[in-house]
Amino acid sequence: MKINSQSTHPYPISKTRTKRKISPAKTLLHIILIIGAFFMIFPFIWTISSSLKDMSQIFAIPPVLFPDPIVWSNYVDSFTAMPFARAYWNSFYITAIVVFVQLFTGSMAAYAFAKFRFKGSGILFIMFLSTMMIPKQVTMIPLYLIMDKINWLDTHLSLIVPGALFNAFAVFLLRQFIRGIPRELEEAAVMDGANPLRIYWSVILPLIRPALAAVGIFIFMGTYNNFIDALIYLSSPDNFTVPLLINNFKGLYVTNWSYMMAGATISVVPILIVYLFAQKYIIEGVTLTGIKG
Image 1 (tube, one colour):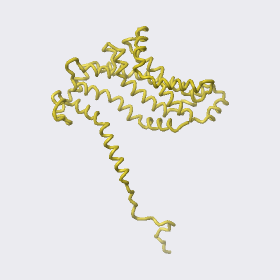
Image 2: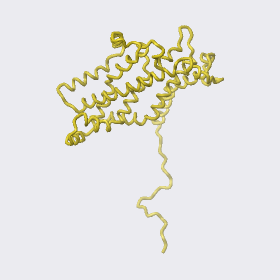
Image 3: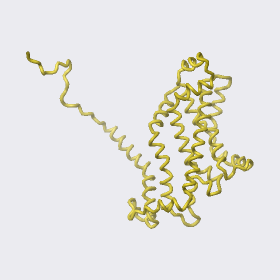
Image 4: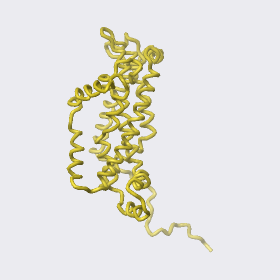
């Protein structure tokens, strides 16, 4: 008995794959995006390049992108010229406390705004969000006077407490995510005897982990890079954070740009590590908070 080797598929399969046509508009869009990405990343490339130059190459005309010779000692000298280890520790623990407290208080406030209805809740939420419209420059002097009155100037409490207790942006993002959680889950928990605090801890928090991760990374980057508050409140080198310490390479008459660029490159490493390991949470969290509720 002969076995017919010819395919009996009802629809003939073409042996040649159809080539996807790329429209000129899409090609132009990709070119524009590539050019835009280059201009966005070029300052960072120039920072790394300048960190490997000596002072004679920093202001060379025409500009030199690839240093010759490469001065690797700039990194060692910049790290030892200033107490970078101390500044790294200061930035790390201040940022860690601010991130933890903001996520905790922000998620509780977001849960209350998303799931509880009480008289004036909508107006209260609008008033809460309206604080995002107040420029930081308006609150600088009042906050400085408050820190002076309670003797928190030149202490890390002046950076931790104001930053940790209030973040309207975090509350807004988490509220949008929580609003998309089905109410049936809460009702089932209530039937099992759970109170609102138990529902928040056992039901809400596990479900909003992507949003918490995204908000936490935003808070981390904002707190770690906070220069202006550290400049206002801190005066002792032992209390300096990384951005403020890098500014110390800027002298009254002479600025050592090679050391400053090396220090700036070193300071970016923690943020890059956090972003590389958590970028999927950023995308997932922002996407979900945008389409929920």
